[in-house]
Amino acid sequence: MIKTITQIEDVNIESFDLIEQSRTNKCDSSTKFPLHQTEVRMLQIKQHHTICQEYVLPIPYLCQMYHLLNLKHLEVVHGFSLKGLKIGNVGQFEETKTGGSIKFQTTLVSSFNILRIWRRLVVEVQLTLHDLYTIELNIGIYRDRKINVIFNILPLGESEHKLFINIYSNVGFIKPIFQVLLHCASYLTLVEDMPYLHKLAKKNPLSLVKSAKNSKRQTMQLFNRFIDLYQSNLPEPIPE
Image (cartoon, rainbow, N blue to C red; front, top):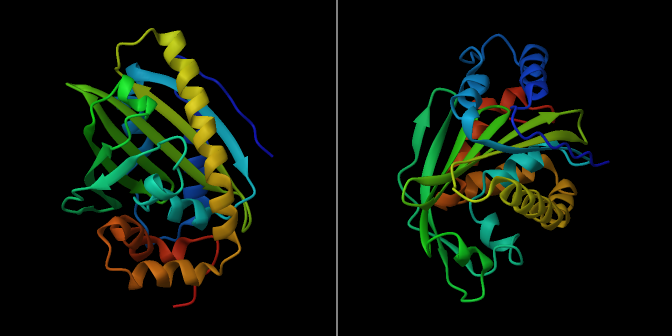
């Protein structure tokens, strides 16, 4: 089941309520979250809110977290929509109390990539794990222009989750046209994601964790940080 919602001026308040409810229900007393951390971040950039989408996906929550926190999926999974995009110059990983962040560069190597129209060939990107339910992708476009994508991932049981996608931007394009483009791009990337997510869903959750832990790749540092912090809070139990 897929449900899509468009919200132009307001941040999706429902995601705030569901995050808070999930914290109360899922997290044990040993996990301390800063009060309303996700709400604070989303309200900080509210003036640049552009679109919101909401989906219910028949995929385990852990698979989505693995997918979003693995930098290489931008190259491997999105070969069509991000044709010719390469990940490089993965920088220092910075830990926070409830997550961490990592900076890297994306390079457009194909002369036929449509992204060349509105961004530089090489831009800096920052991926941040804010907490158990929230991931942010910060994409430099040109000069001080950016696109921020905040993903709220809420488990609805062992086999499905709700995904909120809020996109913020200070890019100076005509807003209605830009909103349509972002909706199309976001939906296209989700369509590309689904075969990969279904493939992950067929695996034992423990195998995802082991493959990340055994990997020496810098691109898996955020997922490993996620497991280190939240393994005991996951809706799909993982043996120690």
